Length: 161
Image (cartoon, rainbow, N blue to C red; front, top):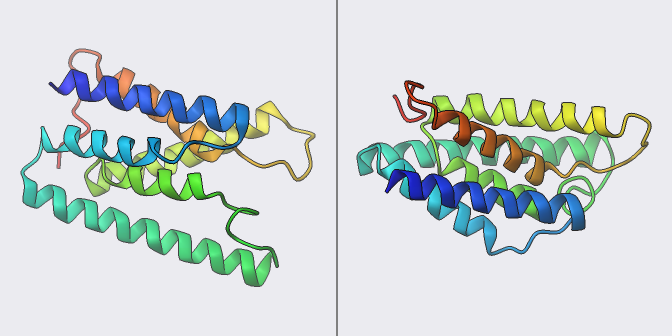
C-alpha cells in the first residue's frame, strides 16, 4: 500500500511539474489530490494523533512564512503579492506539502526544495531579468527525487520522529 501512495505522490508531483514549467498554470485539483496522497502515506507510518499535531504545526509554519513573504512583498518590494510575486499554485503546493511529513522532516525538505528550485532557476536562466520561478513545479521535481531515493533499500524512513 505504501508503494502505491508513493507512486500516487510521484504522479501528482510530475503532473504539477509539467504543467507549471510548460504552461505556468496548474489545474487546481492536483494540489488537494497531492495533499490527500501525502496524508495517506504519512498515516501508514504514524498514529493519527501524531499526524494531526505535525500537520497542524506544518500548516502554521507555512502560514507564518506566507505572511512574512506577503509583508515583505507589499512593504519592501512594493509589489502585489498574489499572482504577481507568488502564485496560487505555489501557495496550494506549500499546504499540500505540509500535510505529508513530520515537522522536522518537513522543515528540512521544505528548505532543501526551495534551495533546489532557486539553484535550478539560476542555472537554467542566468540572464533572464524579472523572470518568474515555476516554484511548485520545481518543488514537485524535488519531491519526486526524495520519494525515489526513499525507495532504495536500507534508506532511513522519512517518517521517523
